Length: 362
Ligand SMILES: *[C@@H]1O[C@H](CO)[C@@H](O)[C@H](O)[C@H]1NC(C)=O
Ligand SMILES: *[C@@H]1O[C@H](CO)[C@@H](O)[C@H](O)[C@H]1NC(C)=O
Ligand SMILES: *[C@@H]1O[C@H](CO)[C@@H](O)[C@H](O)[C@H]1NC(C)=O
Image 1 (cartoon, rainbow, N blue to C red):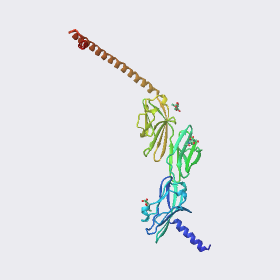
Image 2: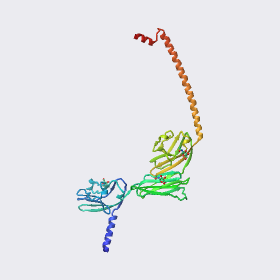
Image 3: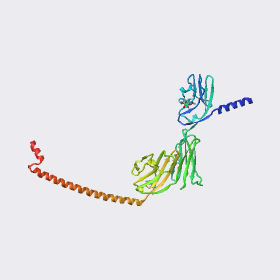
Image 4: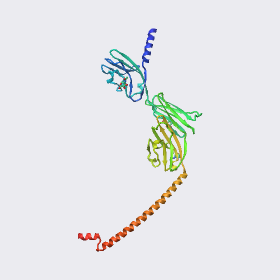
């Protein structure tokens, strides 16, 4: 190959690839429009090709021409037919797959123009949710259904000089990634974990456990304060039992839950020492997940105050029953007097009303 020829092809390739090689991010499994426009004219020809050589969609003689289409595009491509005459050759690609990633060429020609447009298509499945759990002194941070491959990083507040010896496990389920990292916790620090891909990132924070001595009558616990409103809120007891999940209170906790549960605080009532334990609030919002653990101990002095209340209740009950009995007694006596009086009157003509009727009948 001569030098001139080499330079010529080099320049040509440069021109072709830099000629509007726009980047386009498409959500996995969703539909995506690959934009392409041209100067309207007659005898329109459109070829969409995934480079180097995978025909995705063709159009000429005023109709789709799919005989050369790669099978993996089958049934997933279409043009906006009624807008082709106006110079719109955009491709609608549905059910986006990881294999759809790559550079696409949109070739258009009319009776007097020819044009090529290049698009770099990237596929992604965003991180939507990060879970942070504590199990004994192991903390694990995880996320799933993510593409491309995510990364995870940890930090503590205050910064810990302890080396965060974490284990990271990345699995691919179908085309999507699941990541899980766990480490051994030390007390009295807040743990922060960030899951990220090139497209987005999301954080989760586990605040150090706090203690609370609560009244058995009524006790309120708080979630972490969050700037943006919660999209989801769950309260758990001793890590496993769910108390409230997104506004619905579990059957076993109906007697205890008093407050409006989406407010970021939980008010419990009628508590006993059976309710001593760890209360976890897991709050999610647009920024991430915030987990707080409160160790609640019910104060026993409050317990005796409650039995004092019970005694008052019993006294009231007894007094109420006595009054009721007295009233019934008075009513009973009055009634007896009345019937005696009635008997006396009917004895006047010698017969009771019942006797009179039966006599008439015979
Ligand atoms: C082509 O038409 C579709 C559907 O109306 C629209 O979404 C797209 O933006 C148009 N593209 C261009 C390049 O005009
Ligand atoms: C993450 O790993 C830890 C420790 O191996 C495990 O206990 C936990 O269940 C895992 N979490 C998920 C969501 O897979
Ligand atoms: C909850 O956890 C606390 C402390 O870990 C424990 O003392 C208590 O017995 C547990 N309560 C129940 C009902 O499991």
